[in-house]
Image (cartoon, rainbow, N blue to C red; front, side, top):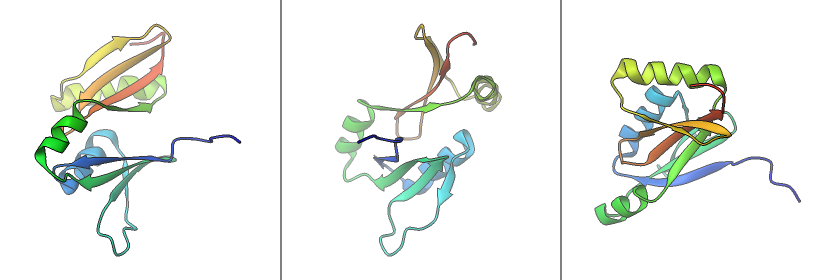
Length: 124
């Protein structure tokens, strides 16, 4: 047996529409509009990986979850530089981490989830 790739993650957010717009405008993810009769989740896609956005059940649940996890996207070196430039232009704060074998930048989404963009080491 073999796992091919991460298909999707599901997270709870305060406002799925606000989060969907953020993931589209900041990270360039595409909205997958096949919600059928459920109404939720809103699925945002990056190539073969997706994020399913569900409404938070309660505020305490959202605070607990968003403070304890992160979502990591692998990007090539050119995109890594382009994301840094775009974030600077938008006034979105980020932090850079040198993890020896790879470099990462971290930002926060509207609900406080840490979003990591990572690329092989050797650039910044």
